[in-house]
Image (tube, rainbow, N blue to C red; front, side):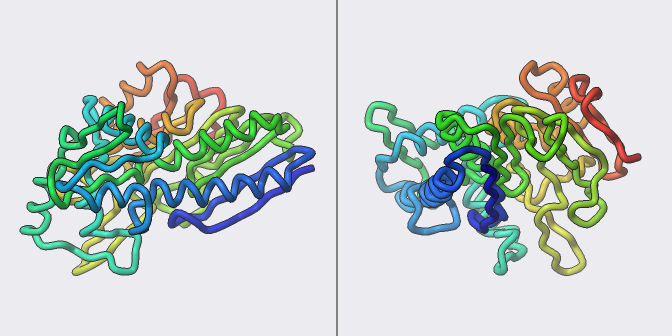
Amino acid sequence: MQVQKTLHMMGTTIDILVESDQAKELLTNVCYFLQIYDHRFSANRNDSELMAVNNSAGIKAVQVEPELFELIEIGKNQSLTQPSNLDIAIGSLVKIWHIGFDDARLPSQALIKKQLALINPHDIILDAKEQSIFLAKKDMQIDLGALAKGYIADKLMMYLKEQEVTSAMINLGGNLLVYGSNPNRSQGFWHIGIQNPKLPRNQHIGLLKVYNQSVVTSGIYERHFQTKGEDYHHIFDKKTGYPIKTDMASLTIVSASSLDGEIWTSRLFGLPIPLAFKTINQTDFIEGIIITRENQLLISDGLKHIFTSYY
């Protein structure tokens, strides 16, 4: 039995497909787990477990659930690894811009400068024994938006595998993870379109054929805010406090783990393109596609045989 469901959570559209004799029950459980994870990791819900940590910044350490501790620990370590544009301590900056929401605004330079002083992953103090987190500076905030969807997708797929599903697809707003043979394709591959950054959604620049893999894309076309004749995207430079200035339009990472896809799109997006592309080709467990603002395609060695360009 094949069951599919679309729902709107975590500020995005989520698509789940499950093929199993218990598909309906498993899909119900997956939706329940999504509600738990939204409450655990969201920086946009003041009642979330993450926001309990943020709201206690500079005041006290907060004991958290093991999954939240694990993801913050991973995020801190990856934020401190170089080269990297990932920084989970960027929450206070994200909040004052709030791009992607109705109250998005252009902050003053003074406010941006104030928030930049709060961005330092070293100030995320972890106590593994107590499973607690302390943010050393008042008003600093963690934002797990660059990592949470990948972590959640991996956890949900692990559950479905343990239930011995025949196949499954989890699409958390463009973070895609597939398992088993695609029941709708004779050869079993999952066909994943790569968005053309210059065209409306679902206009693709090429097609990937994947199997038991994750495909994660970050791009400047996803969320925007326009004011005073300027267009601002949602991926920030932790040095300037403004959206990253880059010749990249999008970066796609293909990997076995969806969290790895999130980590490496976040780390590499906005770095000099030669450095980012070299890093992809030299990292064994990831492959990638870079699309420049001029629609130039750079495809890593391991994807050339499974990628079809529409150029």
